[in-house]
Length: 410
Image (cartoon, rainbow, N blue to C red; front, side, top):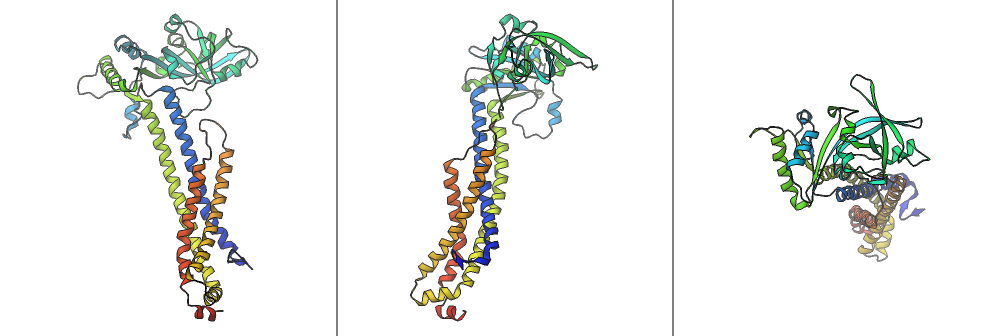
């Protein structure tokens, strides 16, 4: 009994060859789907924060220098740096902000929420968060520049501490562990709640567990040395970003009293460079996947070729009979080529099914992954090309057999 020209006993060889093609197609399609999802997520973050944002940090986002200990030894951007820039930078139509992050616990109505993000902010701080204020209000100008006991909380903090009530106007206690291990606590009144951020690939600060308070208020709880700080500026357009960065660099050198010839002890990063770093990492992972997929496809291709050669040998008498009855060489070639194509197409179908199943099982979050028609078409074309390449040599070999000698081999 023959199925598609193959002996029933060839089942194991067929399965192994199909597995090679299926795994290769699965890796290729899934990798492209994931990479596209990451690119869309990075693009969304880039569009949200804007390409004209410049950030002051210790670590450069685009450095090839492997000595990160040198960057770690740099002083963090300080509130004094921010104040110096605020007085001298001059940003008509632009904005400047400061943020410092530290770990803190929050308590309200007998409920405790650990490891929240205390954010000490100054200036136009909303531009550094993905989420804006959804309930209540922002700080007034006087509150932002002062040290009032006011706080804006993240969506997860609100749902965790006040699951059934509106938190605006309520009081919570913020606790930070001091240097001596003794908690420093302060009661703050909630004036606003941030919108739910969820998971994002590009985000400066996670806002869902944030406790946003003016810098002066935060300093009553934690030292600036115990914060991870950043300064951000926006100059009003991407075209002005280079001028803004250079102006900030000169002012910061002056603020930190760096002499000519002395290296900068700070880094100026952009959202574009951060996005490029993420995409570069994704592309490297994708390249590794493509190499694995290539080897898998090669194994599958050689497997199909081996099956076809075995099939030609086992069906030599049938080939001789067909040629003796007048079958042309192109008919014999077409017969074996169709069988090779059917094998590779079956492998592609299994690979596509596995990819679709995996994509469907990926939970929604920072990266939205979906199967595009392009991937299906591309996978089918790749599988058919592999089938043609794998089946050509066996098909030509079968078509060149001498009918008399083939009939004698029965």
